[in-house]
Image (cartoon, rainbow, N blue to C red; front, top):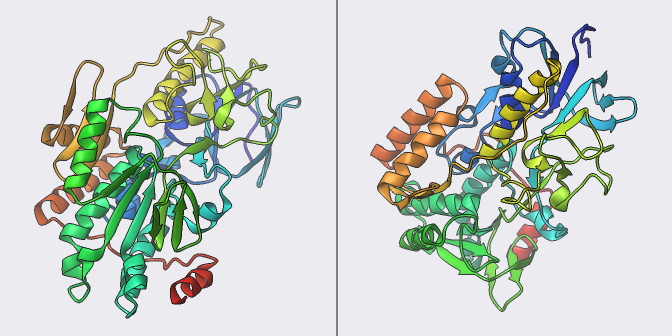
Length: 435
């Protein structure tokens, strides 16, 4: 990897997400060599991916070059690499660009979409966990409406204009709200020769309420907001399979749609060498102690979505969201510095700053530790918090300008098919529609 030898201990961080970046910032100017490995050269602000999918933002608005984050950091190195295996005995990491040894290792690989073993949904459905996936979804949505103009078959046209979003968490709720606003304010102008009133947005939740991690007040309010926007909310229904056109469930309810978005769960990204059963918990998360150390190791740590730290308040580990990852990264950074200074480490204590979700224009729900509120003020709070946590002044300015423009003009300018998307088994779907 052409990384020089150093007399200082080498810390290797795998993953440039919220946790990895927070940790890297804490280690600036410390007596250590820090190497950050990631398969992308950018940090991705995942909470706003749904806005890329729906044309509200371009991807460069929510992505930031990792090398720019590390600019000016002495003894810092970034390598674009896919990590293949960890040899814990030799303290060696194997990647597609070579091997590297470590003194201390931090795993911050994040999470991926969890299909729970359903191969049909994985093959034919759409995920929205990365920027490429969001761009694929944006292209598919627009391509389906273009295709709807060309067919005389009413059932095929309806399927092309219908959406099924599986999962009633923040991602599903926010995406459903954004699509409903597009249907109301943009599609009639873009497609005047298409009866876009027939388009349907269906949000399917296996549980008995939306936003299960938030308060019941927030759940009820979010559901009401969605229904006001024209979203069909289906609860206590579990999606069983999808063949590219037909969605079957565990009830008599079924859907015909050319676009199914799977937002029903995630699992941690594990790495060979740390994927044995004794290391893993539910969802492939690594068992860690209160100092972020992976069970059985003193020199290997894990933070963020990939780490499961079981406490009295969080028996199933901390939520797989940005705030726990950021706080864990900062705490681990402080602890690694204490290790260098031969001081005892401090246990991690999560400070729950609340949760929030936006449903659409002037519609959001916010649960803070001591107060809960919904509506217009909650929407402005949601916007401020997301702008604050974006990395980079330019990103904040660009996103703010886009939001102001979209609010004033009720428009989304990024309705562009930059890279046409076709599923590998697109032919099968077209055949289903012809049948």
